[in-house]
Each structure stands twice: as C-alpha cells, then as structure tokens.
Length: 245
Image 1 (cartoon, one colour):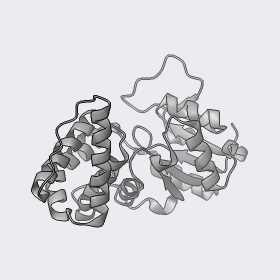
Image 2 (cartoon, rainbow, N blue to C red):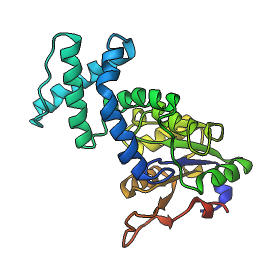
Image 3 (cartoon, rainbow, N blue to C red):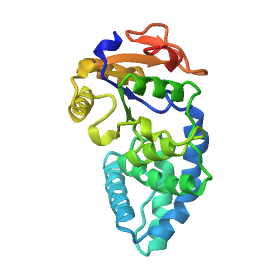
Image 4 (cartoon, rainbow, N blue to C red):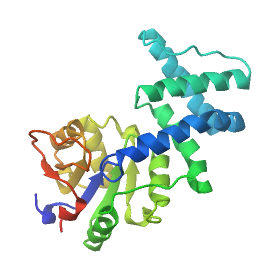
C-alpha cells in the first residue's frame, strides 16, 4: 500500500474511530431508557410508523424462524408501544444488526445529542488524522451498521467538536452487509473510485476480508483493550497516526 494509490479512506466506527465502550455503555443504555417515551410521543409520526412497520415484519420473520421473540400485541398506541419496547430490548440483547432497530435508535439518540446529554467520543488520534488526510486531499467516508443519521449525529456532536466538515459521506447497511464484498463494490461505485483506490480501516477481520475481496486496500485497527489476533492477512495498526504519516 502506498499513499499515492489511495484516494479515499473508508472507516468503521465502533472500535476504530470510537471506543466500543461508548457504544455499549452510553448509546445502547440511552436507547433502552428512552425508547418507551420516544415512541409514545412520536407514535403517529410517519417516520416512526415506518420503523414500527419494519419491526413488525422482522418480528414475524423471527416467529417463522422459531427465534421465539417476545409477543407482539396490537391494539391501542399504548399497547403497541409496549410491544415495540419489548421487541427492541430483545433485539438489542442479541446485538442484532437490524435496519429497523438502527433507524429507531438513531431517532432516539438525536434528542440526546441535540439536548446535550449525549456527546460522541473519538480516539485522540482521530482529529489529527482527519486534518492530515484532508490536507492531503484524501476523502474520508464512514461505513457502519448504525444508521446514517446516527453516524452524522455522533460526528457532529463529539467532545472534540463538530467533525462533519472532514467527512465526505456516510454509508450504512442499506449498501449491504459489512461482511459482503458486494457492499464494498457498491460503496466504491457511489464514491466514484476504483476499489483499489480506497483504504478500508476496521477492527473486524471478516469485514476487512470482504473489502479486500472487493479489491480495496485494508488495515486492521487494534485499539487499547482489543484482542490482537495471532495472525492476520491485513496490516495491523494501533493508531491512525501511522496512516500516511
């Protein structure tokens, strides 16, 4: 890998730009606490109804696949709100990468970010790297299982300030699964670059394998507290400071 070959840098969030603890100890608990009141207050909004419709369809699929989700009771808005709360909690317990769940979580987190009770976290090397890469005319993109809304909110309201000016675009699983090579080809098409001109950085080896299969350059990011693999086909880094330093 050489700097001259790379025109764009594609980044994972959890465990790459942002501590895993922030996601599991701050964002997820916040969504659990606020989901009931959020659904009650916004039940009749079209965007939320779209999420509820998608959650009900996923719930039915879980039943058909004998996954034994909690019962979904239909009736008044209050009754259906409780069904949403119980099913969302069940999905979160499984760490399900559900599009409907991610969409709903993003809407809930929006209130926290805008109200100041949530502040996005990034590792100390992230902002200097963003500045360096943009100064060298490299575009920076995000690919996360979290919704595009959640991604934008996190980077717009970090403890380091608004970082969205450094970012050229955001991708979620609407592009496909993060372990599917076709997702990375689709992202390259959307960016307007050849896969070989894109560097993907993640802490998850199956994601990196998929990106490499698609033709992208790859780097495995190992952050403090993460388990370093005994072997890896991907170059290992521990800080963004070594990427085109």
